[in-house]
Length: 83
Image (cartoon, rainbow, N blue to C red; front, side, top):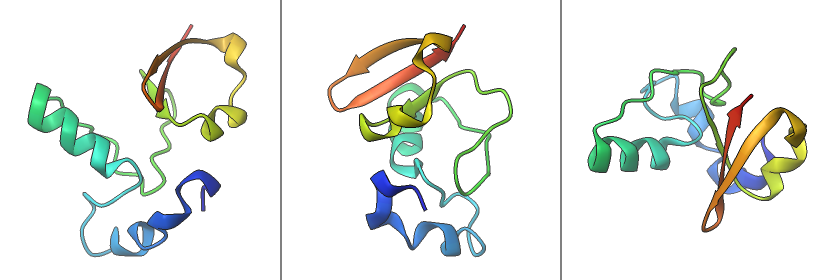
């Protein structure tokens, strides 16, 4: 389990019941509700082979080589764009 989201431990098991439940589901809801953008990634951990963007917290930044990304901060969230 990702240490920065330990309070969401229940999401991964619940993904077997409803695949729309996965880490990042709250962000998926906001993007869909406000901008009509749908996240097609159904991996419960939110991992994608070649993501267009990665949304994470400050603690989550530790997992990435930031030299490989353009990084933007929006409050407590960071958006990483490959390249």
